[in-house]
Length: 152
Image (cartoon, rainbow, N blue to C red):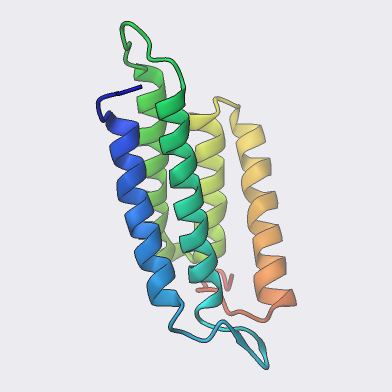
């Protein structure tokens, strides 16, 4: 069944190439050390996962029936853009407010604007996810997260 290359196939191929490059570069680093995972452990896993998910995207696109007329999902595109803007804004703000507060804000904004839930739920999810992130990395693993003016 011959199909023209559409956006999902091209994106899958590009992401598979990026994932392959990440995995290839990470394979040259130490994967495990006597202290635990080495610097190549997570990038290798991330690269392999990117290749696998990209292959899944390409296969799903090629195997599903093609609709007659493709309608643009304006709401979906707006949610994707809002997610990107939230990530970019949080990354920018984290240098002043710290990682934990920035992560809480990012989570809250995604819950409210992307998933359409209220501010109360967004604040609860933001506080809970940032708290769990802080507990796991800062306390349990001893990884110092960038702190803001409040000390966390």
